[in-house]
Amino acid sequence: MIRESLDQFGRKIEYLRISVTDRCNFRCVYCMPLEGLDWLPKADVLSYEEITDIVRQLAPLGLRRLRITGGEPTIRPNLDRLLEQLRAVPEIEDIALSTNGVKLPAMAATLAAAGLDRVNISADSLRPDRISKIARRNLGFEPVAALRAALDAGLKPVKFNVVVMRGLNDDEIGDFARLTLEHEVHVRFIELMPVGDMAGLTWEHVVPSPEVLERSGEAIGALNPVGGPAMGNGPAKYYAASGAAGTIGVITPMSHTYCGTCNRVRLTADGRLRTCLYGDHEVNLRDPLRAGQPMAPLFEKALAEKPKEHQLLQMKVGGLKALSQVGG
Ligand code: SAM
Ligand code: SF4
Image (cartoon, rainbow, N blue to C red):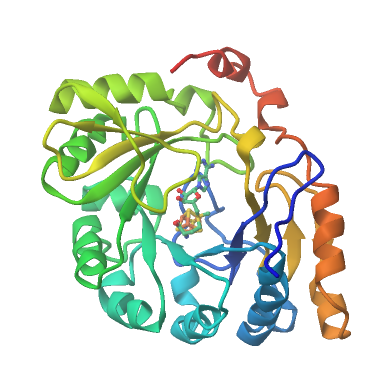
């Protein structure tokens, strides 16, 4: 019998983000220090078989949708092998990938054939010199080439994640909006979350979503609210110019929380189940799994402790309180 898993606040948990590596070939200014992190030793990282074992055990409890992420998931060898294994779990309806897109032109067809349904590509700029400045690596990433590769492989819908930073890339809001006129792409502007080691980025670099929408509308004409792209029941709100092939979405972690409707949990590369994407609460699954213990009771215990909401808005980062009161 198919069951549902509810957390202590009655939220149905059906979506698992799986980090397959903590490593990355980029060093985005808002995400990772230039020198990298203390990477996990290989033995600590879950094997593909272990990840699949966890998914197989949790799927009967209500898991339906998976997202493969990192770090940068495409740099872990043989990612297609993991996708094949996950695709074979009968309860799983949807498998998505979050990637910086660098390797997508080479890998999209293989990943699609292995069972990937769709892809989110991080694309903070359309200008090569600026991509290198934000990612602090020059790997020849071309967002539109990655988009074409994904669409050609049937990985739909394709979403672009654009972290908007004032003074760094906010002058490209209009260019990204214009992309949606011709291309079947769902551009999601994300409010920068000024947390951790941010290479000098502060709340002053955050561009609130109402401003992003206004500037998008100035570039492509009136925006009408639309339903999200198929399989998008995440936190974005979507809009489109009339006749556009794609949509524009905004994700506003800093000015609103979505915690009341949160349906997701996260598995770290070393096998910790985190019940809030932005919090510290976690349960170690790897060691019990390796000791042959069942996963379901641990999952249920973790859900019982899933926090009501994340703590980003409570952080004393100057100005965020004002930002959190911005409407739209
Ligand atoms: N490497 C993959 C990628 O870049 O899509 C997957 C992992 S990455 C951490 C997932 C998403 O988190 C990306 O879209 C990235 O832009 C976003 N992200 C990371 N740090 C962020 C921050 N400080 N503020 C807003 N978004 C952030
Ligand atoms: Fe972080 Fe993704 Fe950028 Fe890598 S590509 S540094 S994981 S946001």
